[in-house]
Amino acid sequence: MMSLDTLETLMAASLVLLVGRQILARTTILRTYSIPEPVIGGLLVALLVFALRQVLQIDVRFDAALQAPLMLTFFATIGLNAELAGLKAGGRSLIVFLGAVVGLLVMQDALGIGLAWALGQERILGLLGASVTLSGGHGTGAAWAKVFAERHGLAAATEIAIACATFGLILGGLIGGPVARFLITRYGLVPAPESDIAGATGFEQPKAVQPITADAFIETVALIAVCLAVGSALATWLAGTAFELPAFVCVLFVGVVLRNGLAVPGWYQVLEREVSLLGNVSLGLFLAIALMSLRLGDLASLALPLLAMLVVQAVAMAAYAIFVTFRVMGRNYDAAVLAAGHCGFGLGATPTAIANMQAITARFGPSRLAFLVVPMVGAFFIDIANAIVIKLFLLLPIYG
Image (tube, rainbow, N blue to C red; front, side, top):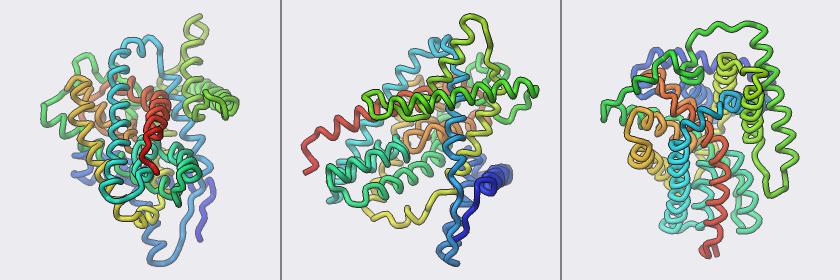
């Protein structure tokens, strides 16, 4: 056993990002298909760790203490960058995209149950390998796995949920770029004239050099700390009630309230450059730690029917992004970037969606609409919609 402490894990995550950047710069095919840097470096380390365990019986473990704070910091910056006037301007697109997301949730669960039936598996297994773990991620998967084990007798439900969510996280970071590139090249798409580089947000241009002062940086750290403290307290207060929400949703909500609440009376204007900088740093490190900590052995142990179901779900996600998400969102450049983002959280998580879109916009140009809509839907609305869809599918009399 080789266990890395918090600082050693942080060092490894930083190296993962640097290695991913260098590999991307030197590998044409990865640049062509816009694979995000954290996905490249993180999967490389995960493969190395898997090889060490299989060949030399050395089990490398990373400290997960920083994962939750980094994820919460990222969602706090999303909230602090969410101006209500901008959300109102993108209101129709947000509603349409939410409709596409709900459609995917229904498709994933129906497809999962159908595949489980066709392969002679328990129907509840198909539901667990669908929106519960793919659109839901590790947290939602682990929570519902307990219900499936206790009420439906599904053996090893937690282990299956973690493995399915891990598979989805990997595929979500790998297919988003190719899907968007296919759409952009197939239809000759370019950014809208008003979406120039000067008007792009910091999340769209994470590598842009921007002047930042120490005082402004500290002010932003203070705002993020308030979001984390109040959001975490709110999540604890709501726990066990009908209004229970994940901590990251509460943190994002506090960020939105703080940003707009301070701006209305003219007390304080949130510094978007500083917020975006800290958001990009926390996003990169979070993804690096999450991906390099993947237990690929869990995927290797997946039974063939479950693996087949997950592969079909990944193909279905790509097809849905191309033939549904892209079309209903306007068949333009913004729609292509939104399709990449949808692949990210339709199979993995919102941070993966943002990384997918950053890889696309870094290569083809900015998309202000995508970075307005995806974070709000992927972080705030999808968990609520997913819980409703899952409960409706559980009402079906087919799990006996």
